[in-house]
Length: 78
Image (cartoon, rainbow, N blue to C red; front, side, top):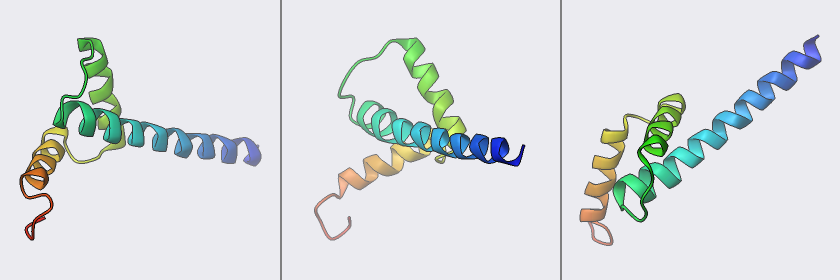
């Protein structure tokens, strides 16, 4: 019984990391900040749902701070 609970916790933590990294690196960074590719609307909704699970600030807050970072990138203000 305890072994099954520990396996479920491990899988949950692992899955949350997959969601967090996918949401942050691909959706927030590459799609929303840099518009490097196009996706269907349903993919945007799934991505925003994944980001809400990961709870990496709000998508708008993350995107805004990242765009401010690129405004000053490779300078003393970065």
